[in-house]
Image 1 (cartoon, rainbow, N blue to C red):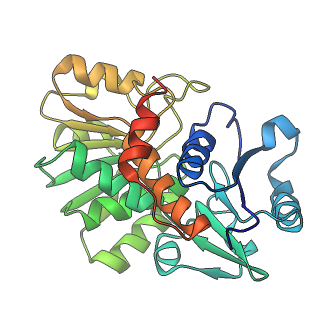
Image 2 (image 1 turned 135 degrees about the horizontal axis):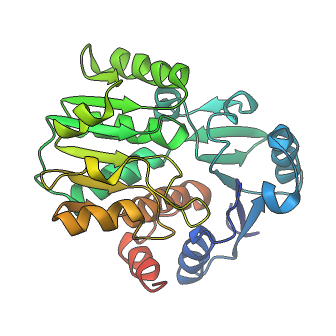
Length: 282
């Protein structure tokens, strides 16, 4: 498989600042692989979301080994795939597609990435109630990771109520009644929460701001982001000023890339080396 090299890519919007190509190519170089990683940015190409099937077809025809998928395509990609891993099927979102033997197989490495970040970055935090902002493709993976990591009750807030309820229904089916619910009173939920996780794009360099009013934060919260550009979002800055324990999106970014590299290359990745390379970007 590796004799002719690996050609991988990322499909998404506004992804020119992504550190994923450098993570993959640096690890490929360290393992003496011919490894190229390219960005397929729908914004830069000037195409709308309906172009996704054509982008996937083009990548397949031109010999891509695999693709990472990011906002806003993690759920839209599902009907375009031949198979799903058990985890991707359960989560209902895909961030990694392996193209092999004429088949498109979808995986989700976001869930593993967030869980690893939570274990490493926020060990021992209380998990009785956690508030999560957002229920999109990344939000679905994070919600599954939170409940799998022992959160007793997850309160979801999502502007698209139907999408939020669909995720709650999925979580309840997998983890049991009462483990997840769709919130209606954000102030009350945050006041009673041990933790807060932002899975919306609000806070990214291209979409600055906060996903909730700063005055709702309190010092008893731990606060986690999945955004890594910038590493310190406005939400994390406010939380740290209050004395909250915080987790940026860097660890999730690295560990989802570790697993994706392994799926594309068929080789074990050196997670420590990839973490060190990610840290060198700052």
